[in-house]
Image 1 (cartoon, rainbow, N blue to C red):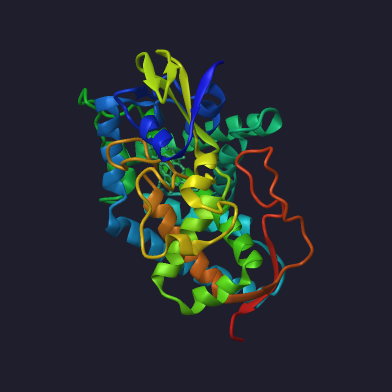
Image 2: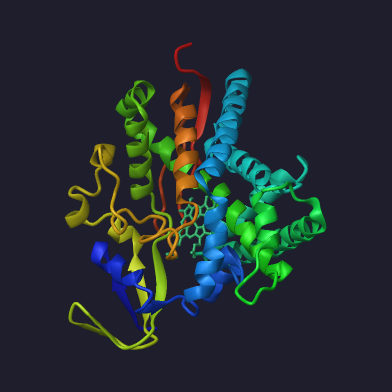
Length: 373
Ligand code: HEM
């Protein structure tokens, strides 16, 4: 179908102007059927969106993100101690996926047994992995969607019988009421619970890319070991900027528009080129170079660094979990730079024909040991 593609800060500004663009009918079926599910916050507009988004933003307060980050940091300590003790090769992506899923489940307040967690982590990652691929990966993602939504529906019902920990994200979603005053249908509440656990697990993609960046830019390992939090934050921003994750986002024109001499008719699909915006020469200068210094001493503007969307977290569709992502990726990088390792021969290529993509090997590390041992 015809589409208008916009790029860069001014493109993002148009894309996030909700007086001009809407989301309701913009998400392609294959993405709804795998990644997001039906009835979730991603598909809402205007007052319905603001109310549902407020529920998410009330869950990701600095205190709550701090608790999750502490849980994850402790998880990395135990995981890396095991790597050092066992001394056998580990796949960073798989390890991060399982660890992040376990921490997310505990944080959200799910009652998922240790025996259930690896399968849940795999199903959530399969949903992310399959959203942009036709064929078997798509089918696997659809099946995984049904399993995870059924499982989370049971958690919502348990919460509604008073079984969720007080103040937990699960309790908040289960008790949330939309503008009509009614509780969310259990199926939709399950979609929103998944909207917390699935993307937290997906931070494993960034952890794999952070590991690759540390391998390719060893000077940064030393800098991060001795440097302060500003360096860590800058490194994490650069990993998010350079990682090819969500390639573009879609919305539809609410009415006939003119933008930079282009006519955009009512109903036209408008795509925000996310990857292109994060690699645009006029925004970044030398965009293909991995240079965390570009973020030192400043926070990027709302439409500048947009791997997780742009604009306002509270009012627009920008990722509700961006601060979670930054905090958890920082915890992972701190754990990784505390180690020394050997990188055995492996396929480090990042195929750009699939989305999301990652280093093919998942980043295999061998002979892992504490950095100064
Ligand atoms: C790998 C890390 C992540 C990436 C790459 C990512 C990326 C994105 C992107 C591109 C969007 C769409 C923005 C838009 O439609 O304009 C989004 C939305 C969203 N993300 Fe994330 N995200 C990540 C982690 C998280 C985490 C950790 C959470 C929750 C704890 C989260 C929760 C959400 C929610 C609820 C939305 C929907 C927001 C809305 O429609 O208003 N994400 N994310």
